[in-house]
Length: 307
Length: 241
Image (cartoon, each protein chain N blue to C red):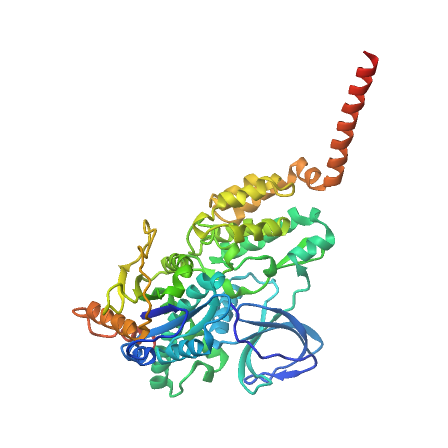
């Protein structure tokens, strides 16, 4: 849903925190989420990401989650949250913001387009690893989608936008329809590890068959949406077929958590046909088929002329 | 927490002003949200202004959406209003305790705990949503989408930890003099409910105001005999010390 979020920070603007007087120079807009905007900012020659919220309550709620996650993390891991404060926007109103680590990377679909889909199995594994850590700490990511998965060099994965992160057992705080288990009549909207794994399944389809997924959401009546329809796309997609068994389990909620799911994903990755299948281009298959047909025809002609 | 969610596509034209009715609801502790459903054009300037005004008087939110966004809008508005209702109650307590009114006035380090309480209450407190559906002739082609949105809302509410119930009304009634008709009494699941609106006879008038008043009465009757103490306020004082 579109929100009336009109505040816009221009490049070069220096904003000052109202409470702690931290000064940040705005470089550019990185992205727009459901409840705010994310900017690339600079402070003392270091780069950070700044999330600017519309609603203080909403943003604080997200900060609470980030702080709880940070507390649970073992020492030695990079901290994610640097500063929480308010600023005065160009319109004179106060806006809440927080500063987090800047993650360099491309959206998952962009990355695979640029670097090749052969990175897909590894990106998937790394993403499952990230989810597994959250699940172990009692959280569910909630709003898993292509836009919220950044991929950096060598398939390194980072999750961004923690607005949907929900404690296990509560109702999912924020979700996107086509990734939502409830939308596909595949189960509840309660936060459990299986909820994320369901979204992960749709995420895979969105990476390889975005057009067919989009088409499906347009065609189907709400009561006819089902995981069976999703499986049909998967079964008929060259890139997804090798993972079909895994995806079916994810849609049916058969993995206990992302840890178990990633172990199963590894098995799929190690299978020999995974890479062969996904690396045989369509035109090559077409060519092979065409030459077989030509051979058939010439043999037929040969035999006919001889007899 | 009590809410009315009005889904309409135009202006009221009979009886009490819906803005007055919404203000009545608000004074009874019921928030009124309004969704204006757009067709291909829009609801017109007059309709849009009325929709916004009803929500403002009812202490709720208003949105204009097209059919495709209906489900997501309905569930998001309901969620937001829950948080808002609790936020108001907590802020009232804050005023008494700290002397300052809003969460924004607290420094960020102190907001965390307050927001944690609001989030917790939003998830666990009892919630009732009465859906009021405009079934005037122009809404007829949109009712399928409205039903889907109701099913979707139920799905979201079922995921809450607190008890959640919905009821469904449509207006106008078939006979003259009926402002609105109960289609579905308070329920916490829609298992087996396929058609919420059975064979509607689309009326010509749009008595939005009287229909809202009807629901305010419905809530009152339901409360009669129950504990009179305001539920939210009672819980609030347990949490905010």
